[in-house]
Length: 385
Image (cartoon, rainbow, N blue to C red):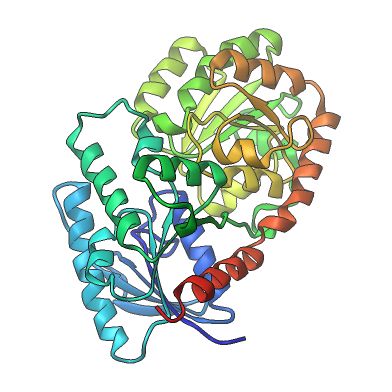
């Protein structure tokens, strides 16, 4: 196989600044590519970290951005990324420059004469709907997404739903855009545990059905929809308990509302990776109540732990779940979420079968498979440009 020299531009990674699911997606993809290719990852870093370092065969080039808001921060980040890239480019030509989401758009602008790929992991519209149409930041970020799509040589999205959304929003021609989904290392999310002991550690009776939400506590991910469904689930199964892992701007609101509704909901914040995996393998059911979900890495994580899933019928969740086989798809409403949970919460054998079928489907989402698809994109669409 021909070895490529690849540059990643991403505002987060697992080993420096970590914000959301993009960190895991970009880092794991880079590490998978690095098994056969030379990968340089341009990203912000923490003050205590070295400027340039190597981890798992990926070379990290860390900048120190600043800014009074996210738009200014990303502009400053992009300019520093370009400086770092140009230094590294003197040591050898890059075959592909891969930009993730809108954050490094200024860097893409300055490097647009090179062979460039942009991956849209979501859109500003999808994250917020049209609720913030007059908000300056909404318009600014949407404009950067449009411009990145315009000047890049090739665009990838992580689902068919996101591809259609991006084409509609930004008038992208179909020849320019293709789907390369996210991936997973299933073994990283599976652990043999004593579920009853883990439940007791979280104040849950070992025999009580435990429902788990994992993800950012933001409007797009719909944690409020699950919280509103809790009383309807509790009416059906009074010993059910609910744990929310993650953080976000809705947390204080959700915690206040949960106190009003009773003490059967707990918010855990961010969990260390190993503790998250330990808890994931002890719960009975994972609920993914997203209003918009371009892909849904949490679905693959749940399947990796062989867990049954109830998820809203949107985006990548809708594409990847086979209804009543490896998950249950529901409408985006508390009532529908509650009905979906109540269908399976008292049927552990059915939940087990759903989880096992989900685990079997993971073969198509292994990072090795996904990185090979991306290399095909680099070679077919970028070579010779």
